[in-house]
Length: 118
Length: 117
Image 1: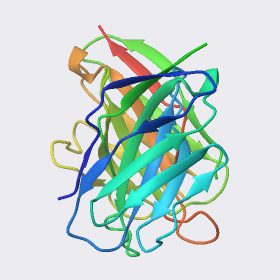
Image 2: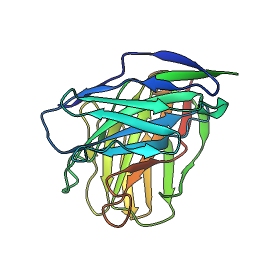
Image 3: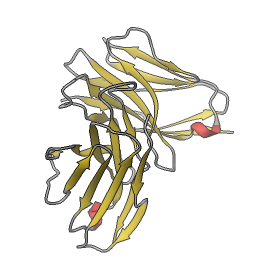
């Protein structure tokens, strides 16, 4: 079974600075997807970024980018130019690459609470 | 992405009663999922709801406690039966497309916050 580990329960960053959130995972599969989701106090789960394991290039979405290290099974999220609205809980998640749909479920890490200091 | 709504957004219920949560999507999707998020915790998958077949439950979750319906490709319900305070959680539905753009990515509804007294 796959596992996702987020070992840092909390982090804090100064507004306009850069912060990196860590995530490691364990799997025996070679093809899979990794995601970062954001959950603000409104509790809505918002997709931040997605990475396909077969792609060597790291995914980027505006101020958000990842450092995907497949061999090390590491998937960190970098937030540049942090804004007050980035304060939320961030979850790392794993999904098998299974076109039958049988393994479409997401396996989540425990999450990390990010606070942004003005 | 997809526009997903859930009803109710929150509820306070008495133990021993049941609550049905609705999830509506603005377009047809193949896969719908139900998750539970206990206070301060991560998300745990309850079951996968596929149209035209029985829901597939994860270990630790049973149909008698969490019956699910999926009558069409845009709608699903989750019932929390015979509730106890331990069922107090946020319940979230999510959807995933298997064709078109953004496949293999789950998008979530706003969640239902349930408190059981």
